Length: 432
Ligand SMILES: C[S@@+](CC[C@H](N)C(=O)[O-])C[C@H]1O[C@@H](n2cnc3c(N)ncnc32)[C@H](O)[C@@H]1O
Image 1 (tube, protein in one colour):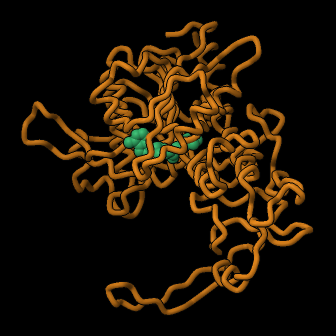
Image 2 (image 1 turned 180 degrees about the vertical axis):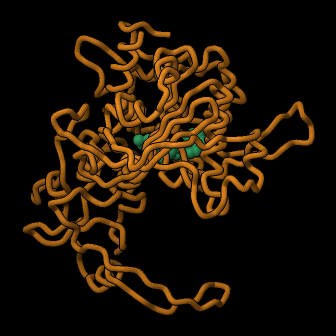
Image 3 (image 1 turned 90 degrees about the vertical axis):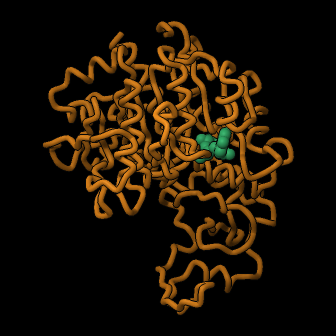
């Protein structure tokens, strides 16, 4: 383990273009490096050209980086993953269920290609040298998926981390609730290993709400009040295969995991969190606050970003509709949706950036702003600012504007990682 003067050695998985790396760098001070990313991995399975990995390497030339399927690295070259204190990564919400194998020696195995199991494998294979801390990001749907057994996947994740000796804390954070310029709701998950000061400290609490809505790591950075007292924990019962089977604890109506929670020894304590933001006490940068704040001068915006022609199509896509549609199987149904704000409001945080944000074809979800010169889409720099990335972070190599928009749709709001990173370090030092 690193001491207070040595940096926390960090590995970044599913690194994309480095949102975690940027957030952790913001915790570093001139006189003290707090987090050092010592190894990173990024591989895009759907394309031959590895743009995100190339951008990452161009932005962080001093960081060891591999551009290979993480499952392959674990299987064929595990030794290259260095010892580390903190593991970070944003990974997709997939089916985490496990099947009971016929041979006991093979144990329980999740489906191939499910990235959660790569994280698990690293922790498991590192054994005693597994990292003390984890910081993960996912879509908030993770807490209630799959639809037929709400919360089952998260229970599998919690149960497997419990087995490896971690206390796990989570919190759904909407960046805009804390003065950041994008409405982006994601679940952040932090885990603390047995033996750490934080683990021991949490174990002392009779009522886990004291940590969750008091002095806990996540609450210190992103304070929330709990909607109600947590009376009884939800006990995660059985092994991973038991949880995967159609168990009555995970019914289609309601997940046992609410937006703020903690799992200690297989018991989950959770409740709905209500954000309590105080700008003066924020640990993160709040430089940009609204969509209007991130806009560049019209003079810097190339013509291609202005809407030309196709206005009817834009209005149709953004508008409310109720119409008959027919599926490919010939089934006819009534489709309806409400109107989007069009153009987007400048005096509010923006809507969430999605991966299809780039390109000129009219779309319901692309942002459109009205400036003195007319209606236009957002430029790559403006999208970077909505995620609190530095300007032109992704303006590397031959990346097109659409590619850069795709990166930002996949990325995270850097200020969240900054807040969590600062709070984690404070707590580690306090409980040494
Ligand atoms: C949600 S994005 C993470 C984005 C990142 N946090 C950022 O700030 O840019 C997940 C990333 O995992 C990568 N990925 C998917 N499958 C992978 C695999 N098998 N091995 C390594 N990386 C993978 C994707 O290409 C994608 O960039």
